[in-house]
View 1 (spheres, rainbow, N blue to C red):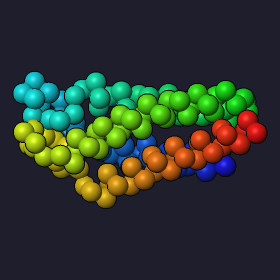
View 2: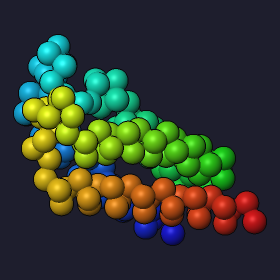
View 3: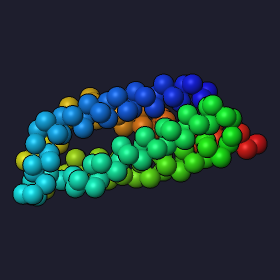
View 4: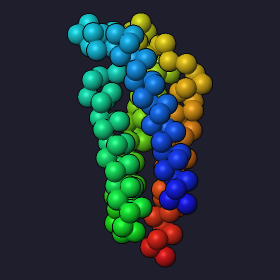
Length: 133
């Protein structure tokens, strides 16, 4: 199961990097000053930073078998999921900032990233819970 989690997590990360690339290429950083984007810089960069932290903890769990790393990974994923949900709801709503770089996100990429993220969250929880039985 830990290897399946790693594969699904890397899928989510790959699509997430693609979405970040689209946002940056579309001028997301330049739009911060004019408030055109719905994604504040802290939100845009804390989501992947926490995800990489959780992935590092998961790798530590895979290498050592220490369940505390698996639970730490799940804790990081809780924050990642919350921030991802915030970005998703901001992406769905049009509002006054409807011209942001995030409007160019392909629906398939957003859906795949979300599906892989939720799958990772559930699989990490199930694996960590199984360890403490």
